[in-house]
Length: 510
Image (tube, rainbow, N blue to C red):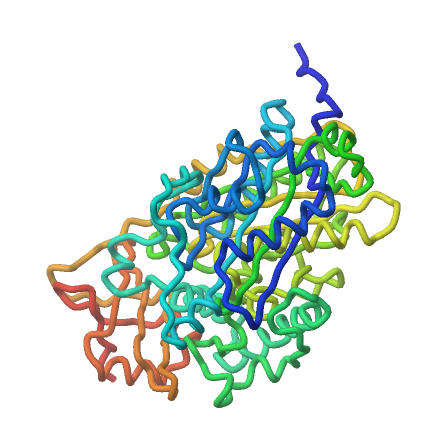
């Protein structure tokens, strides 16, 4: 028996968005979220009393246990509104939209409000001024958490301090550089060319933290105010987390949009999909590729094709926003989706995390809002856009296709179950220690540097003779110093001597 035809009235739509930015006043994340939500609600005021769920994206800065409950009070939402906060992950805003679309299409939800914010600038400024931290309302019952709460790193990564994104993403970048046959300077130049167009988009975005155009050389050339943070990245290549930014989305059924008199603002959710790469970086068979983005992308466009009743692919998009915390994420995402790095449509709709700003887990809410704004500004014909989000270290992924007209066959969710099982099965075994020294082959490596450019750490992921991987730290300061003088892309495929006991390495004697 064929499946029942979808109810057009239950077609999920993004009906309004709001964004907020603060450069001067001291604000909290809830302050900023309230501003963004009020901006969204001003576009669809009759929906305020119809909200059934309020979802708050995980906040990195200190907040109380119930930010959604606090926000609901600010917005005057009733006690029956479901309130929740997400787990960690830059994928969560798109995951929330996809989950809402599933439930709206099934008739289990009518209107939801999704919001997130970071106020890191304010938090630092308060500390500098000697003021106490604003930690929210401490005596509220905690909002329930939703989403994938598995860790982003395991014992192997923890043992060698591979915990911060700024230290992990360069490991991916050096694999990409080696694959392209570039040294560190050549890769920096290529990254500059890739990211310079992002700054042009940021310069035209009223919500961007750095609204200024940068040339490829200004991004790529190390200078005192653009120091190398972690090889090969300069400061202007990395996500900026010091902003005060917020964004909110109202997602509802087409019926609710019509009832509220705002149907003409609707951007239709055509399809959503998600997948997860091998959880821990040391276990990945190829740290320079993302099979999960490829799987989610394939499922997404298959679902979009089903929704359209015709083939829909990358070439049918009018605009997109690829998650861009670091250049390696952009390159890996583009490769997985079959998008050229110099695609004339551009790879960002916001300006990207290094230039628009990187408000923690909530960036993708801004990305979705920007994609929807571009679609609505583009004329009467059917236009399609793509938004992607990722969490941890190119680990958790959520993708969505949006359109200016209803999908003829209704919203669809992409199925990645078979691909996910294959990705999970591809994980490489990881050794924690060795009983005897062994020579191993470098899979990838990087060097992170102090403010004065001195090498301060040099983690390596290496492959043992039996095929297992190890995450390794230098054996002593002499190894760190030697690595500081080594070209990292050229070091991929070289040899290191793994010591017995703790996961430490030395360079072979020459």
